[in-house]
Length: 348
Image 1 (tube, one colour):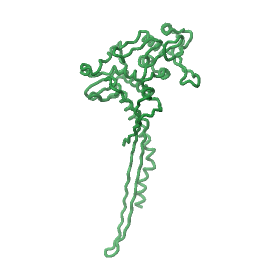
Image 2: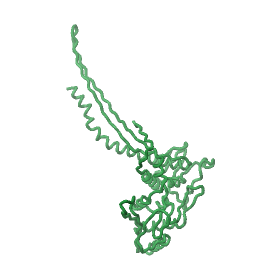
Image 3: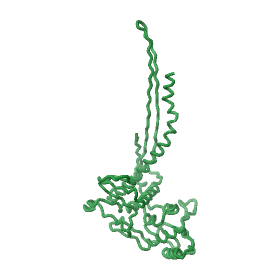
Image 4: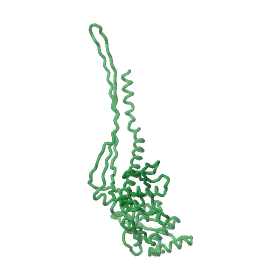
């Protein structure tokens, strides 16, 4: 009876070890992956601010193996002769194994070029607009130009501010978007095409101010208002169409990194360039603080060159921009047939 009880006690948990781990692993690993992605993006922003090489390490697989082993030993013996007696023994043991294995794939070569150095597909940008992101947030962040009107650029040695026409087009589009008079529509094209054709559609507003905004926008874009829609294409201006030139993911990261706050000593010593101002006229898309002291309860924080860099938990605008960078990172890390090195590390 004792042996049977031990066997039952030791092996009963094995029947439910798998199901019990699903909830715990799903949320724990999900939280760890989300946190590590945020930290990697912030770390790369800081690296780019210091003109250091960014590192992109994708996690391709997470495998966790559990096993529960047990054994029961029982023995009986008899001693004959003088002082004859009987002996008995019962014993048992068990082992529990938790073996997580994580596969890391460094992004390099052709995969890196495709993901971070080539312009973002305009379909991806317009999908974000279609999902509810405001144009005045996305276009200054992700576009180089609209119909030849050029956006600001902080990648060069000399900063270039946006053309007035670019800024005004973005303002007018946002006004009409918020009023529901400007929409994105994707129309399936030839089955052999890689992506559907994308259009911006508009309706004539009832409000006189909105009508004036639409008239001004059509004039800047050199498009006939009565058409009701215009196809969005990539490249140089084309008559009757809206030509966008998107930035690459790397260009976006470099541009945003110019707003990372750095120690004044590093600027004075020429280690890093002076950052962009954050006055009302040039509102920073996000602000990254720096300090020698570890921040308390930040949204995301990393340590670099002995300093802490972080985004404040209460800075909603910076968090929104950073979240867009997370989405951008997910768009950039498209599935690739790259034969780059893969590193599998037992994590437990």
